[in-house]
Amino acid sequence: MRIPLFHVDAFTDRPFHGNSAAVCLLDSWLDDAQLRKVAAENNLSATAFVVPAKNLYELRWFTPSCEVRLCGHATMAAAFVLLTQYHPRPDSILFQTGFHDLVTVSRQGSSFCMDLPAMQPQKCAAPVGITQALELQTPPAEVVHANQVYALVVNSAEAVRSVGPNFALLEKFHPNAIAVTAPGTNCDFVSRYFAPGYGVPEDPVTGSLHCVLTPYWAKRLSRTQLHARQLSEREGELGCELNGDRVLVKGNAVLMMEAVLEI
Image (cartoon, rainbow, N blue to C red):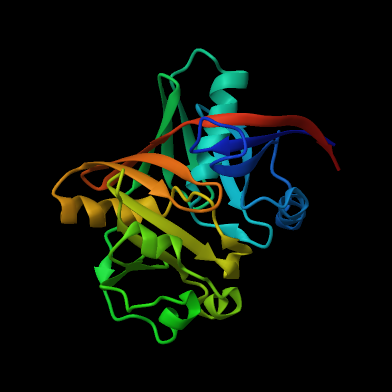
């Protein structure tokens, strides 16, 4: 079996930045064990598997270790491949995800905009041991939780950059991932994201995280349109908009590799 395979850097307009995803275009679904093996072979933070269906595409995402419920950067990568390599005329692609949600990605000039569900974070107590697991110098000002993510709010972008994650300790919070966020200096807010329990110690740029952070910062800053940066080593930029119960996440993407996978 020969499977078209693409590697795409999402949420960036420069090679070797943003978040890398693999995109595999299938004629029909492989079994789950094969999907996991292909994702592990790609060894990127996520692989998007795409199967054509009537008037849309079916879409599932796997990290190197498991399937995930929502993955923004791999969705953008899949839409980028379809809209630039296979369907240059349509302005949007509709995905039916593996968890039965519908996601639309539209082309807006050189950018791509995902229409994702907003996930309203709720204030909560800091999980025991989280400050030590992140080597935070001071306790977070606030902790919120949504979509199996604890987001710790700190006071500055520098505090986000200086986080020292202990991945063995962070894995103990699985199935919850951990994010750290703060007001930005040359953007509205910044973040970092850690999910070692899902095989992703630190994710370079996380679209799904902004389904949680956008409602939080929109309320705090009294604005619905926001500019976000994720301060991983590769870094990435996202345009975010709170639109009722949806979050619009916008970014660019760069094709890094086109190949054929033989299994």
